[in-house]
Length: 108
Image: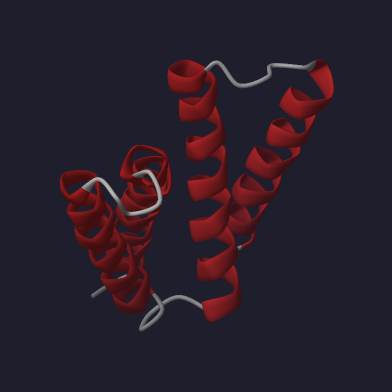
């Protein structure tokens, strides 16, 4: 796999990270079996993508980008789906995460 493909796989894996994290809300402490199965499948896909990406990309950079995209995606979906706070400080912190992820990508 080349570097560009590794970055695409990493970004896809991060979106699956967002999916399983949001799925935890629906899993209701793993008492909802359908949502729990969704969490399990998306978690495995997310980890598998991260594992493939780190075969090419530096592990520190890949992990930081993976968690950053996953965190931002989870917060954005938390706002959209669960009416979580949109306070200015919270949004500023999200912007800082996005800037950090972009910086890591640009730094190579």
